[in-house]
Length: 349
Image (tube, rainbow, N blue to C red; front, top):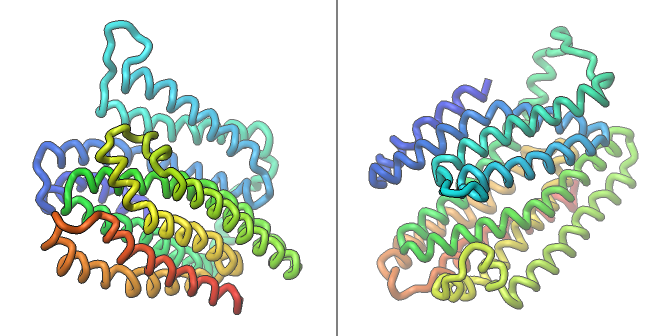
């Protein structure tokens, strides 16, 4: 039900960018990328649902193999069709091949997973039974799904706002923001995987009434996330330039990235710890509380204040203030507020 209206918005990307004042050429490129990528949404939905079905039964091998295969497929065909390597006298199709390869990878991914499922685990699926889809079950599912969906979406909206603020300052700041964002998501891959695995463990143990073991799984989740973030945070503070060189060797870019490292690392740590802490109430079905915690902590504690600070202080003085002013005045307090509220909710769960 949600797929069609969601996908249709992707095809309006060009028009939205034009409304926000971007030039036609850039808006057309963004519209093309979004429209082609939107074609992969059905494959992403199928992959995520089948993965959840297997994860819930402690089956992980098919998803791991499918993801590794998709990674290899993306690398090989991306290098060939985007960069033209190693074909002589062929420079590749560049930007226009990127969304095509990405979309194809999504379908290859779900087909590989489907093959693994059909070959090894099809006996776990007993087919659809319409009489089991009741109004009560749909209502219960909606109470869990809707807050979770909005909670996840709000994370993207908040970061998009910070990106918009960076774009108003200058091109260098946009580059630093995009790099910071990528480092965040690389890190989130680790903590997200730990949180997802712990959530499954806690859900199974809560379902069987083994509350002590569920608490143990939650403690392990938070402890491991904290340890990982302590290590990554320390490495970034010691020399963030090493991570920055993954994206660019430009000295001005690396200098700007180095100036932002303290508030950025604080944001990174609090964001990932919040992900680990949120796993506990979510596994108990308390997605509504998690949504309101994030909404109050991040939007009221950060977004409204960010907007005032940005338009009153930062924008009029864009040439005199460092980009890390945005990180330090907005993201850190907001994520800290969310983190503390998550901890409070978890303590009384």
